Image (cartoon, rainbow, N blue to C red; front, side, top):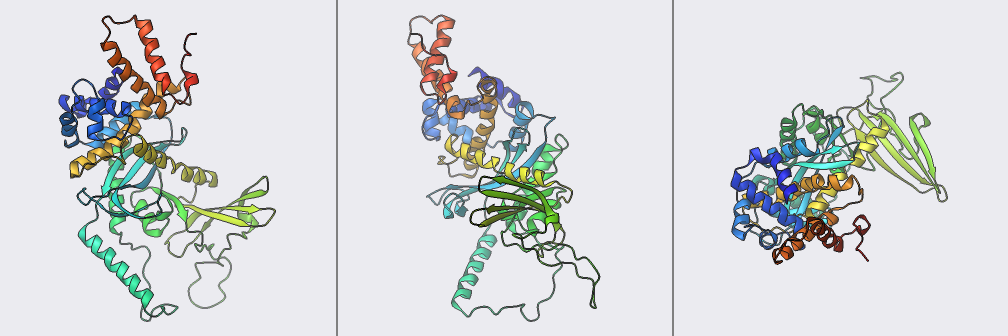
Length: 450
């Protein structure tokens, strides 16, 4: 408990004394709770006055989570000499009721279908050297009524199109060219842009940030335009069938303006001049191509990296198309930074599995916000608590950490029943042995005496 209090002292200036005491009880309760993380469950495991009403008061207190996460990161997790990039993604939490604030229907990647629930968009800073993500800003996605109406109209139009005649091929009569540079961001991108701007304001000049890694859902021109408006570069993935064109070279044979695009590329039969690296792994050959190419949906050229995998026995091929809006970025950095985006998925897993993101039963606006942010706050708290253990035990996990604090809780209650406190050396051995019982990596703990 003392190390938790010492850790929370880093963010003490942001809290009133009562609120800080309540938060310390909740943090300890989350570390020792073995079941679902709910307010009732936490009240059963906390000590020193962590009643249900105490925890309920904290959940209904308005807290500045953006400042809390940033101050904790600055004091305990940030390494100024390391390079960081921004990763962003959406996480969906299933909810059965209709009263929870912001409940709607969202697409869940794990289920690969639209489900009822609540959704949050998270931005994290990823340490490039450590390959570790730290969530700093979590915002709930609450769809407005006009947005819901527009989605309903769009779905009805799609359904009507399926039941009527097939759309004629080609360009509709009377349509005009639209300037690609002029982009009207939809409600989703406006929300994300607002969150990204808020994160950049919070970080300020403390950490130089240049890149934002987003998944393939944002591999389009409006998303790239949104990121470039914040003076950052987007790293994402294009569709596998995206059309790519090199710049037109040579003399223009006909009349009119000089063409912008060259011949369309066949990504599975690339020119050798674009080849950057080729390796063979057993019966597979992995080729990496890079070049500055155009896509007709974008108003500017992209730094494109094509990863082509070929089965040497069957000649079957598969490919992935990554891109960056930074034309000077190397192919290996684009691949590395895009792969680091997945670290935020581990944050989502930990928040759901260990810290109650999937378990909370709150329905009010403030309580839902606090429940979600507490889960991601615990992701960062756990990383700070794991640091001293991992200096000598690199595989020390969150389950080991929870086992450690559960052992502390059991040992504390047992020792209270003794007429006299044991010797400090014996006391330390008792704590270690009890923590040893539920540990995933027991070899890291002292073995029992014969």
